[in-house]
Length: 355
Image 1 (cartoon, one colour):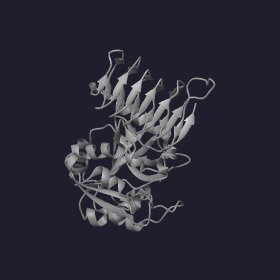
Image 2 (tube, rainbow, N blue to C red):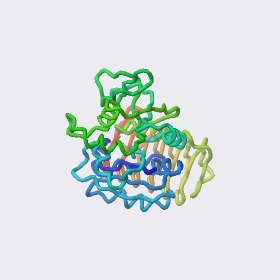
Image 3 (cartoon, helix red, strand yellow):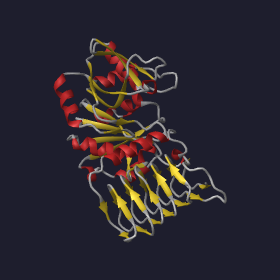
Image 4 (cartoon, rainbow, N blue to C red):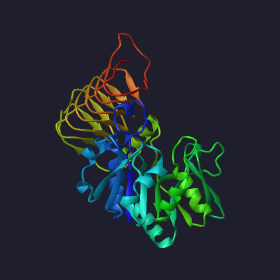
């Protein structure tokens, strides 16, 4: 079995994606796509195709040839632009051949053992196996219509969903997916929808089965999803790894990861789970649960929790920052008058903001 991972540029997650590929946005200081690749390799799938935009070299530079994941990675250009997941299947036909394959959305975070799903698909005789997750807002996703335990149709972002399930970012296919991809037409958005492939298979006599994801699954549709994904990953921390220089005046509670070259001093309190990357400089600050600080972040007198701070950012304000995403190279400074506590901000790269 092969795997196909999506990694083309997208306009989702603005303003962060004005300058960066969303699949490389770090959660708990690791690019999102790394979690997908690790997940696939852990299930024993080693031959992986990564679909990227025609003009994007950033993903290949970050991911490499797959050696670090124990996999062999082939890069596939999505010629013609990002025209939907159905189009991804089309452009990957040569790489996939007639083999069974897993399509994995590279911006999804899934905490479910993948190996049993691979085994279920291999043994089921199904032409397609979809992973489903119960969600409170199925209208945001592809939603299956299920009759007598079988999928008969999948509708993309329906106004009135026919079930409480969303089709999650794991799809298994045999070679019939290529025939389906050739028979669907662009939708109203101009995209070749993956939901149309599933509906075509179900309505043309192919065996479309499903399995429910029991643990958590997170799709990254907007910046709030980044915060939730970061929280879920940090919640799984089981032990602290603390490198760098930590002064005796610093108090650390819970699971806290601190990278090499980082210096933490003064009356700093860190309450985990927290991830602090390399070569940061932190003094007289409070860093609360579910916060990740990237490389070379500076904090002086800061107060932050449940937030993502990317590389080279600087926080030099006593104002409390919560539920926030701060882009790489940005500076958050203090105003000359007091602001209410609990500022929620989302800023892109190299921004300057006083709060």
